[in-house]
Length: 493
Image (cartoon, rainbow, N blue to C red; front, side, top):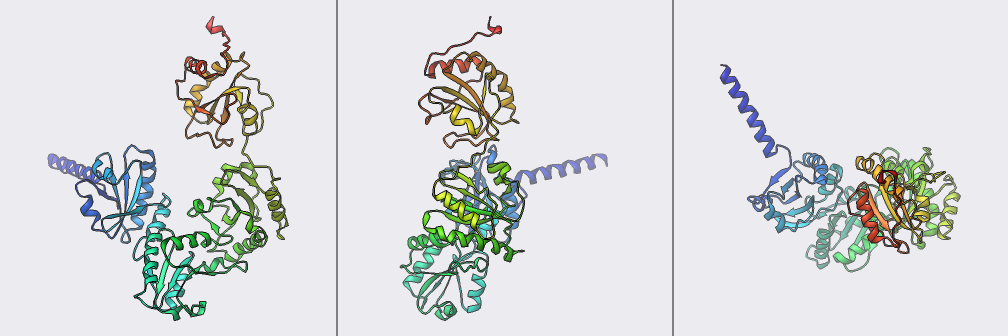
């Protein structure tokens, strides 16, 4: 009896282990042996190509699994371990991890270009299911399609055997990742929207309706994927769209003013549009000046705003917080409180276009004294210390919590002491978590060290050598503009 019990227990453990090895979640596991056959079984399929050792893949895994569960019965998600199935990964040009691709009926259709969160994957993949353009047969169909939270593109055609309709369907297939499409061959369905001949209309979401812009726009060019893409890019967002995590990259591809406050179109559409209309009343005066505008929910972007603007965001009132981010990475914040008449925003914009606004740079307070062997740099003193044209500078970007940085500190201090008598060189450090890093410095991990030569401040050089004092000295002897002057310390005697 004892033996039988143990045998059953062992078999149960073995069975559980096999299930775990095979993967018992909702993500399909594909490999070289069955990839083509199994992918062809699905009309639409999202495939993640990954490596088990990849940190980004590990972070994506729970989000991907959660999305697969939520999309069960709608569209399947699959994954391929490229370390064990190199033939498949090479075939589809996978050269980084994770890589996500959409397949349709066994053929690669497009790269996945959405957010890598469960919500983002679910939202993006739901748009991939079914026809790229929905056929509308009644006015009720049209109303149901356009009365949603997303913009809608609807083609009105006079007959099904129509060259422009065929082009519209091709365009919808090419652009379905970004836009919602529908079509009809009954012009009467669009009569209340002024449709009396073949046309394509862009319907903006009803909740974004405003007296400052049209809710429906007419596309007038000949229909093609190229012409329609251009029209939608220029018009889809309107004068003052709702900035979200999903459309952030598209909107920030241009210079953008954003008003952050309690934006909630589900529970408080009236209050949301109250402030949006006050923003739009002012910004419509500046539309031709090359700046775009948006409103955003402060809670959704709070972490990002605190990271970029720090204590400047301490006010928690109902008034919108106004910032500008440019494509060049310059940032501005409206310090004056937003006034209901919009005058403070108007003054802020006039100052911005007059180039009289001071750029906002996240910076620690300038140290009262800075006499140590390693000079402390903050964003406000970066130009003064690191970009001093007469000095060679070795600058370490660190994080206070970083163990490697803490281990380096005594060595780096000793280096500073050894070179303290050399007036041509500066050993410096900057807390990269509390100060804005100039865009020409690529700091992805800590510590990151750069050598910035005298009179070549636009050409910082990443230091990749060893981290002993002798390693730094050897490097600087080769790279320094002037011969090093090394001070002998007591331990050297």
